[in-house]
Length: 248
Image (cartoon, rainbow, N blue to C red):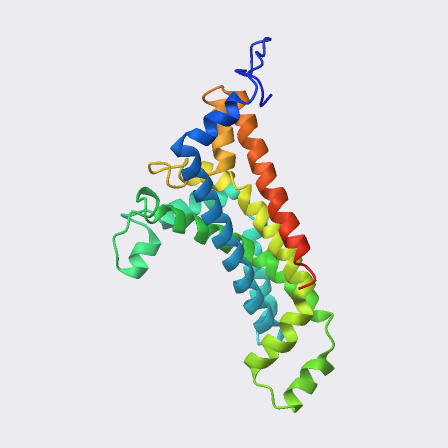
């Protein structure tokens, strides 16, 4: 379909060769959408791995009320995205939103080109924290406590233990979490659709949302299919790079 000019309904699918690919690679909007996707995926992958890793290490130290915190952090992951989108829209509301009230500011979070993307990244990371944290906790439970005790006896500080013992022992889990977080971030759609619809001024428009818009609003299935192949190629290259670095 990416080599055709098809509206999704007509029985005729005229073959147009690479014209769909030429069109997307010559329009400035595509590069803006691509950059938005990279920024979203990279930011979510970084914060969506570092924060759960730190929280998992804290909860693994058997702090008081750890079971409550595990449940509290995991609940957002199993909450439907439609609920999360509605609740966070209220939180980000510039007039009556909880966030502005707490910060004593007046920021148009979802209506300002400078703040809309950071707001979406915040929500995405918040939703992912619980799932990634549970994976890290499962991996930590498989590490012998004698290793940490030996590190403590050798005089290592908590940071040195985290850097030289915890992270190397967790590297397979970190590798897994980075890959699934990066791939899911490149495929983000529902959060964009529910909260910003790609706005304002396409500042939060991403590749999957562009595929949806072209296919089901502009009825240009050929162009949507071409963008889908570009997204597939990006995820394939990303995964191959991560796979080649897995032993390091």
